[in-house]
Image 1 (cartoon, rainbow, N blue to C red):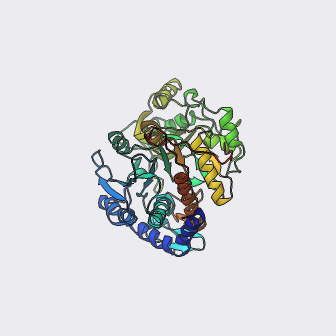
Image 2: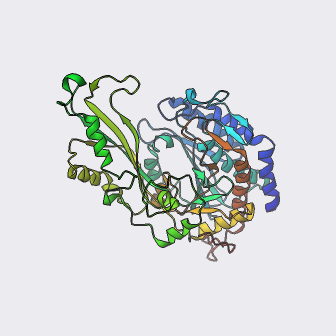
Image 3: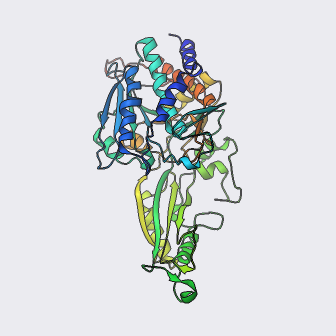
Length: 473
């Protein structure tokens, strides 16, 4: 079947209402992996919703228990035509964060899809259900129409990404052979601009930690003891303030990367303007360099006393959760030790530090990689738009498992947008992006099949993607 006919079939899937139908079923499953969720809902999504969709298109599916106690299940769907053909490994996550129904506006519900114009509301629409739905169906329509793909596919779907991908590392390391491939292609995160496709090649790492000052077992009256007893909240806030300047510029030398090279600066130079506070962050950097080429520290939660019912007392405990987003060129193992040294040097020995969950490592693929050039060329041919290319996403994903553990070039093509409301109320995807993404992914798969070449020795096919002379670096 010609490329043009395949692209039309992909657009028809979106325009006929089939995409809305399938997404409605996926969103209806409350597959929450955080505090509001139930473990049985995570497995139900795999067994009753996404698993049958894979099987409908001819994929073989296997559901696996998480290798760690309490971890969420995983699914691997595969279509193997010939072991000699190139193999694509793909990824998505079917779990969502807490629904927080009370925060959604009237007329919306986290687990009922509502379409209003271009917006498709529902928890998990943008993150990540519509994204893996698009990729599954793009593959499935080609397979049903042609009887083959021209390459092999392995699709890994986890159900614990919103909990830090708990157990995914152990699963990938134990199943290297099962997940072996030639290239990784995934979809998560947002486009840089809604109307322009984005390709990103890795992600910033993230490490979360608690800072606590524990002075007493109970609170004491601030009139009777104010001025006599140390205030843990004041100590903690001063400790936090020592980490950055008043404009958020990091003061810990070990927390600064060494990887903002000229080629990275060049790749970031032509990106469109972003929502930006000009007096925040590293003053010598552009907005794009600050989020894609540099590290940032945030206080994502802080607690002492009761803000909703404050009492005239000096608390015995103050706690905060800090987060460092970091790029390649930062020694991850030294992040907390460096903070400990810094706090001690500033006189804050009372501040306790403890890491929260596992950290995501930072990864980055060179924009000059042949796979990047090939993907950019295919996307531009389909959409007639030059994609934005990011050396890494500003957010964090378990990309190091694919890049480092499995040793694959990693290409991420997101089908969401930055203002989607993910992790908050009124989350939504854009139908216009979904329709275009159906064609983009279909075109990419057609191009991969067309350009697979076999070594003369008859051994395994050696993939050598040929660029269409489009420089996206």
